[in-house]
Length: 170
Image 1 (cartoon, one colour):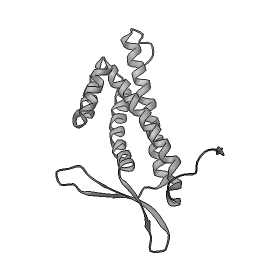
Image 2 (cartoon, helix red, strand yellow):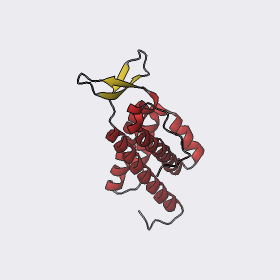
Image 3 (cartoon, helix red, strand yellow):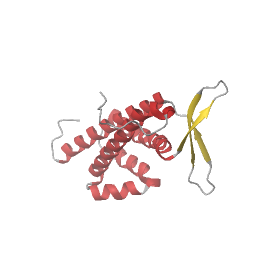
Image 4 (tube, one colour):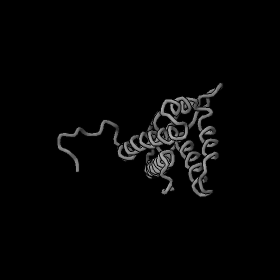
């Protein structure tokens, strides 16, 4: 339901199909990142240590996976969590391209239009990266981020319970 007092979208018409999908993506990424912080805090023993670990972007993923391998989890739970960490890091790159790259309309030869993105890879010699995101891909990414949030939240809760001596729930 649209609120009569709510302003119209500010973006051009060809971007409008992306507005809700990107809004969901932004919120779900923030939530999954917060749940990842909670999980890492449980792994490290404190939120401050977790923040320090996560700030080292080049090594954080591998260090977290190493810590997970040291947990006494079932093989399924361990692999699910390691897969979730790897998937989150991959999807974070996709999310970063969508959020930080320039968006532009692109006219097709048949007269139709699509939306493209252009960004620069941060390397010694920056390389251009072009994308052609589809609305359904943005929604799928948002859903995956929601699943990571649930996974990280649940595992942080289990670790917290175990730390408190209640290991009935795994």
